[in-house]
Amino acid sequence: MEKLTQQEEEAMQAIWKLNGGFIKEFLDAMPDPQPPYTTLASTVKNLAKKGFLSSEKMANSFRYAPSIKAEEYKKRFMNGFVEDYFRSSYKDLVAFFAEEKKISAGELKDIIRLIENPERR
Image (cartoon, rainbow, N blue to C red):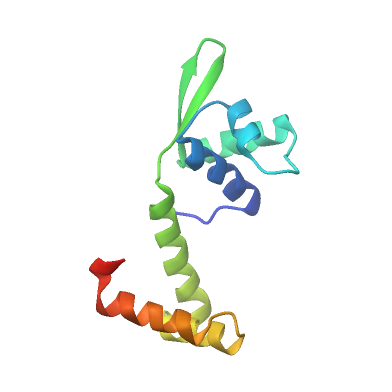
């Protein structure tokens, strides 16, 4: 599965939030500045061509639904991201954020607790 462009990701965020709908509904769910309707319509059609959305014709319009769940896309994206930028090492990923001071010692302790006790999420 290919990575989404920023524009596609923004559209998918709205689509996942609504769990499908019509282009106008997606537009209303997007944060400002919203893209023009025609730009979003084109993006949604491309997402359908790529297999991220299914469509159903209703009267003279289409209703779109996500073909992939947000969590599934997030997993695939993060796995590819860690593989591409951190040599498949989550340790290197965490070290990067620690060095950049983007994660605190307290947050690291919370992560360790999650690893040791995943059922206590």
